[in-house]
Length: 154
Ligand SMILES: [Cu+2]
Image (cartoon, rainbow, N blue to C red):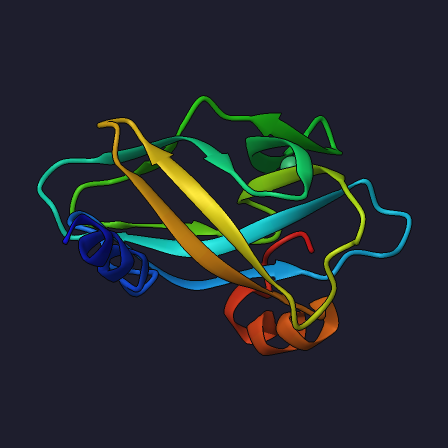
């Protein structure tokens, strides 16, 4: 009986979570010499209180960090974040030029377009959610997003 329950839990769709729903998750395919990759997604929070992601995990990488890209004195920098905060009744968008989950130290075999990487989010209340995030060619996705974020750095 216990085994059956576990199996059912593992089949739960990626976005099923009491407080946060994740949509449009993707990881751009990286050039062969890149040491890191990034995961992007939109986190939607229907609750009356904010939700915090404190850390993340994905197999095939040495270190996972929460980052925000920003311009500091005219330089493009990535600032490590203690948490990704999804506001109450609001969204947090992880996208190029802004918040992202940094996947550092790419191990072999290197992920390529068409692969799916399980990315686990660890929330402040102790809950976890694992997303099946597709790797996609950056050019294809950027073309699609172009109209939405013309003002973003890259
Ligand atoms: Cu980063």
